[in-house]
Length: 139
Image (cartoon, rainbow, N blue to C red):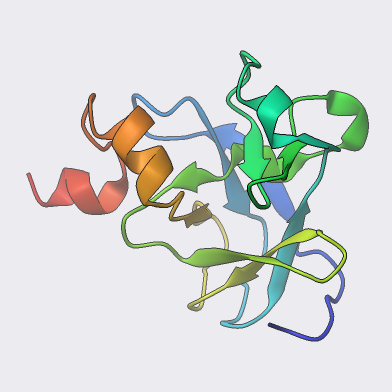
């Protein structure tokens, strides 16, 4: 676990690859290990989240989930798409903040992505085929 976050990286929402809608892109170069952005939203019980119709949910643990769908939280991180070979990773700090860090150097203009995890992948991505860049290149 990283000890602290620094200033958020400059990012922008833009069109992603076909089949993925919007994505989040680096608006500056980001170095490996740098803090990128925080996934923000209302903290709700996971039992409640299981019945919501939104896709912008980030599960903290079996008790709590962050609902990132409400625009009042300014949650640009919700536009980060899944990748099987990600350039970012999410860490949950001791205050249940979801912090996104770069796991490799990211060039300006590159789309930000992280692995959504096996459970999400198996339930929502696998049935339709993964659309991430790594999987599309291997076809």
